[in-house]
Amino acid sequence: MSFLESLPLLELALSALGLFLGGLVKGVVGIGLPLVAVPLIALVFPVPTAVAALALPILGSNFWQLCQGAGPLPALKRFWLLIIPLVGGILLGAQLLVSLDEQRLNLVLGGLLLTFVLLQVLPLKLSLPKRREKLVDLLVGATAGLSGGVSSFYGPPLVMYLLLLKLPKEVFIPSIGTLYFIGGGTLYLALAAYDFLTWEILLASLAGLLPVYAGMDLGRRLRARLNEKIFFRAVLAVLAAIGGALILRAFG
Image 1 (spheres, rainbow, N blue to C red):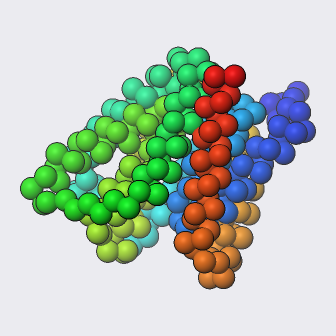
Image 2: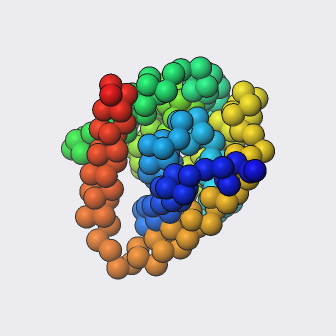
């Protein structure tokens, strides 16, 4: 019996819904696939399994993104000092992901979600002097790496930092795609080394491509019709609720 065939129908349905909604959010606003999908899947599966199940959808979508515009070389040249601690932090965080008990992982995952929501809600107006950029590269890379290794949430710190740098759209898209692809590739290689990214989970991840890309296709169609500000606020409310549920589950 395969891994998918052994799962209860309700757990399969909830996982497919999480993948679809993650794809829907990414299709509308361009980010948010693991932010939505991983916590929803983690409500019915262990956190490492939820993270590993997104391997192929995340790597595939990020590879497509880094190939846009000028490609990955400009991002590699500009952000190499960020990439080094990003990779190191993910390797360390992945070790915590496979070693921490489920209660602590739920607490970490819920806490990171609520922190992300809070940072989005607060009216922060920050600027970064050019002379401080290299130091901030190191700090952002380490922060994104550690949070990414533990939860796959390496994206939010990177997105907020690149927005702070006020990169042009044609530079932002391949840059975030390059950083995402390196982060995702490092995370899933580490999970494979720790025997959490098995062939069975890879097959489940392959099956997960269908609901993810169905959600992304619908999201792209809805993008022109929806008020993105209202939609994003609704997403934040859902993320806050999921984060609270995971924290309650950790203490339950």
